[in-house]
Image 1 (cartoon, rainbow, N blue to C red):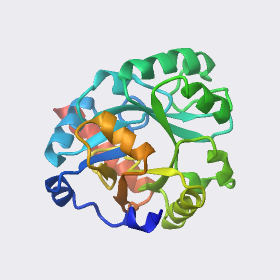
Image 2: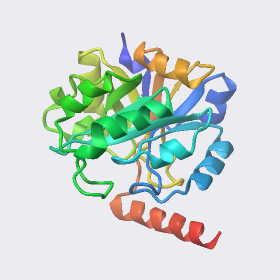
Image 3: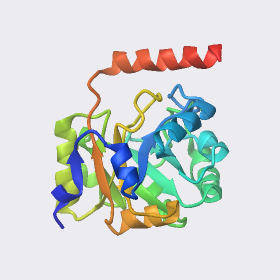
Image 4: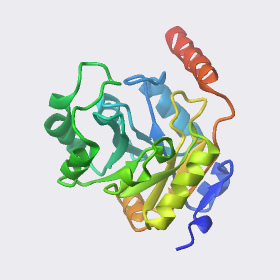
Length: 246
């Protein structure tokens, strides 16, 4: 498989993709339930404007994903293991996400904060996820020294807007070398960033969309953010103020 045909570094042309019958999903998004600034009502309004979907992947938390259920919203979570390695999980059914969180994660959570680590190795977490109907994707793998840490995941996140081009290129090379499925997401923390990177495919519903990812019948496109951490905090602050005055 030639990954260069399926993975592109370019600004998503959402109107064109949608008019051509593609379902477009930003596969990495954080709400106010972890370190994002977005209220669920604000998120839904923005998704309706853009006509795209999103995977809610809050850090070690599932409240947002369970509350906001919609035909274009994937119930997910970003899990940080005891060594600081992040894995994204996408569930076909929100009730299974809840069960996974309660049975496999919450009792191993260090403290109550969303950014706390799960006191398990990511390999153990991934193995336990295989008892549920879900897909795992190694998040922003370019930040880790050893990409082989992703060997057990179903997918590799090959474009992360919060990462660098070099890291994203490394992720693509690893995915191609190991013939892994692939995902892309903005890693957004506010609605200003949503849709910067997307995964898209011809699918009538989310089940078919997730199946297409497993079969490598999907595409990814996106760009890295042009600003750094301080600017991201600025946009988060702007959105929090907007939410307060509504």
